[in-house]
Amino acid sequence: MSSSWSLRRRRSLADEARETAATATPPLVAVLTIARDEGEMLARWVDHYGRAAGHENLIVFDDGSTDGSTDDLGCTVQRLPGFRKGSFESGRMGLASGVAHGLLGIYDVVIFTDVDEFLVPDPARYAGLSDYLARRPDQVIAPLALNIVHHTAVEGPMVSGKPIVGQRAFAQFAPLMCKPSVKRVPAAWTNASHGIEAPYVPDTGLFMLHMKFADVDLLRRQADRRNQLAKSVGRGKGSSWGRSGDDLAALLTKATASVGTDVEEFDPTTVLPARLVRKENGVYRADGPGHIDNLRNHPLLRIPERLHGIV
Image: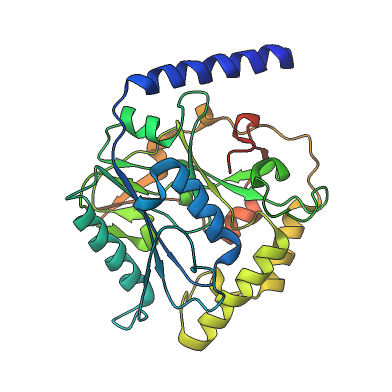
């Protein structure tokens, strides 16, 4: 298949998506996140979801940032007094679920993601997130997730102000990140938002591009900040928060060092979505290995070219 034919075909599909979008009624969407000293990614998060849902419909909960990253964002910022009741994770889920419950009295859809998680409908099928949600009335929606990976042997440092995807051409499929980020019902999120008290099956038409491993230097800095919180107040016990920045940077470098660039492109049609969810005590949750095992054991794949430049 020639590259020119592929380009014409992608343009044709995109034109069809735009024509369909013109006749669909866009839903009113609220998007939430909780951030602390996430300056490198938060601006990208606000830009991405602001374009998709409108900056006036974004809420950033600031959990004690000291880097100035939540100043002058152009959206609603709610500064928190800290998670003082119970564990950090239960407080975080209680906040996200409670706020979403209230917002669903006004909004059609509520989305909750971390600041390094970017939902992207397949541009071959949809004109954007608003078009996607107008055409997908599911009560709960989960994406197919890709951990964008810095192939340190062949890719240089990330350039700020430019899209990440394109600077980064490789990813790993991440089953655990195929989580129920989008909902139209007040079912509570659980398990660090990897679970929800309502059934769902991930959709092959929606991607989540997760940027935790998108740049080795950013990974090192963010891991050190989280590791300090793990040591000082016990956050993230048993997770990658317990690892230093140098440790995670070394793992990323090792995972890509022996892999060439001639790898297969990620193909959503090869995924069996129903196998990505398990039900336990009334909770439906994404099922898969944690970040470290995923990094070590999942094959490196090429990111589909149609996703380049979107985030």
